[in-house]
Image (cartoon, rainbow over all chains, first blue to last red):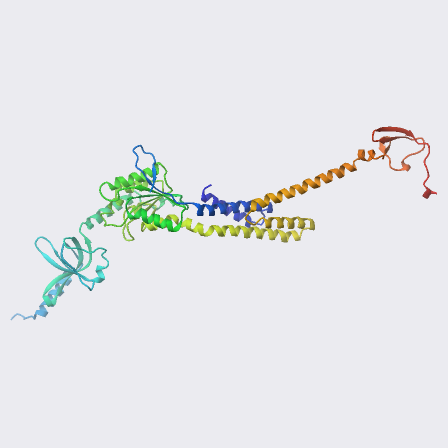
Length: 68
Length: 401
């Protein structure tokens, strides 16, 4: 899932947890989902390493990348 | 007899006349004898094939010029004539200057700008918004210039979340426009990146000219990928700044724009999780409170849930949840076994096996002597069968005597 979608979902979850009518069982499921999502994003942010590549010119209009 | 003037009077008249007639004029010429005084003022001579003109540019004006002229440069200066009385010479006090040829470039750019504007290339409503969390950014620039290095350095400082693809291009000269536009088109054809930064380092107006070229502008306008124009330093500009979706004052600023949301996200994601915890806890305590006002059974249940859920808050959430669930399941299974053996022990057939009997009259179970009379035919049900009997005597209870 894209980061935008995950953040949107996190927002929805937060809203649902704020809503008094959300039932406890549902709230717990949502809470778990939220924790998993936010942990995933945090992990993604700390674990990733940037790739820097340069496009290599090709004659046949294909993409060829090489580390820059 | 004609009035005889002193030299000072004459000089003063000439000064007035020159200054009033030759103020705010522009003049073009070649620089010679350029001197930069310790005071910061510039002294030089402007000349053409047959004439020369002394020129001075005071420090207050010279710091704004952005380059230092040298002998042989062709300049267009703007200023006013003035007389230097002690030497009886006149000179031009320069207020501004541009390298000769720049005027033509500016005219050309202005003409193009108007054309492109008329074609709607700069219209605000055709500008695309940048994706908040770009994963890959393409940079159309020279592979040897400072731009790509500046961008990588800036990103390194801020976030690792953005990958970079360099699309090498020639950034000045005749071949430049075709090279830049080809890379923009290539990126689009292959949907290669989320954002394109198109730029180069600082340079003269002429150096930056390809970023105002029709071919480049049209490639920018046609691009489906959002484009940030990042040409030169703060003060530099090109028409690509108008045609692109976002103008960055420098390549570094472009990298900052691209990584802004990531940076904020990095700062905030921990807080998001914390607020989830708080919201959940709040919800539980609310439920806890309302449970208290409902009934004892419900309260007990909620208390138990609260205890369970609160213990789930620690990091090994899932594991504990499963453990809890298993334990609950085991408990339920256990009580089910107990219950069914209890039920079984209470079943009639089991009772009969232990030597008890059931007596019926006309298929109705009787449990009292008052339900029967002498000569009634009764059935006695035993564990392995039935006996039919006739009542011949009903004993009176002692208490009934």
